[in-house]
Amino acid sequence: MTDQVFIQGLECQAVIGVFEWEKQIRQTLLLDLEMAWDNRAAAAADDYSKALCYDTVSKAVTALVQDHPHELVETVAEKVADLILTRFQVAGVRVRVSKPGAVANARTVGVQIQRGTF
Ligand SMILES: Nc1nc2c(c(=O)[nH]1)N=C([C@H](O)[C@@H](O)CO)CN2
Image (cartoon, protein in one colour):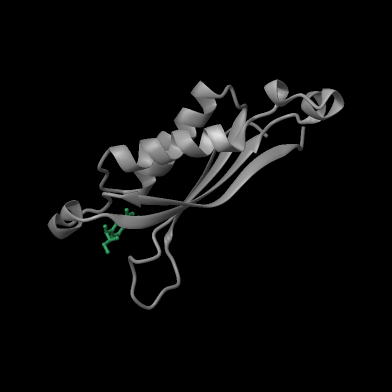
């Protein structure tokens, strides 16, 4: 099954980082999500209830990332993947977490993980 629902560049203001000064501020994280989802039923019936709602997922992920402090972008990626797999019954997910402010001479840095099956 190759269908996906995706979310690109989801901007979150998070308490994120290993250093003490980072725990006192919010920094931008950008999330890219790809979720395995068979879109045929929703499309055939033109039925929102059969779709994976990117707005609902975006709100849930934003709350998770913004409402709890984390040290590592790896932890954020794992928690987001777990949320999507469990709360939204998605079979597979790719999560990319970018921290654009972290390295002065890099456009961005971060991690990408894949969990479940596509
Ligand atoms: N693989 C990782 N490396 C680093 C992380 C991280 O979350 N994962 N974090 C930091 C610091 O918080 C850094 O972003 C401060 O600028 C360093 N390396």
